[in-house]
Length: 158
Image 1 (cartoon, rainbow, N blue to C red):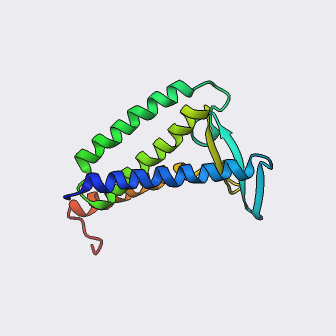
Image 2: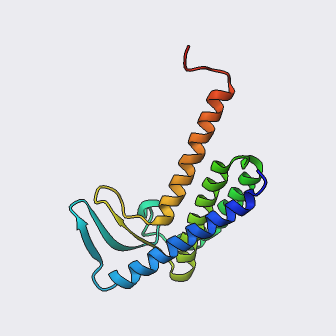
């Protein structure tokens, strides 16, 4: 792939931009009301998450640990891209993960917590950066599963 770094950085930039824009708008429109019901099972709810994924360990002061871990993971993603980024799916998935990490990292550094706002009422409140990270990881897992299955020569027709 000739321009993998270009696609990677474009995906990172767009992911961070969309995440930051969404959080800016949520902070602007929900800072006074806290939550707006869109329909029965979905609302926009402003939450400041000081913990890790889905508010786990929210009561502990993990800010510095999470910031350092985020930098290490972000570096690991770039190394992964260099080694396995041979097709566009892996490149874009890596960019989604990196962009999501950066989007949440900006929150942690600037306000000490991650802004979450997507609330389906059956799952902890999350944000677009979380969605980018999970989507990127799923794309990579599916890609590696498909590649491993077909690379072994096993046919589904047997």
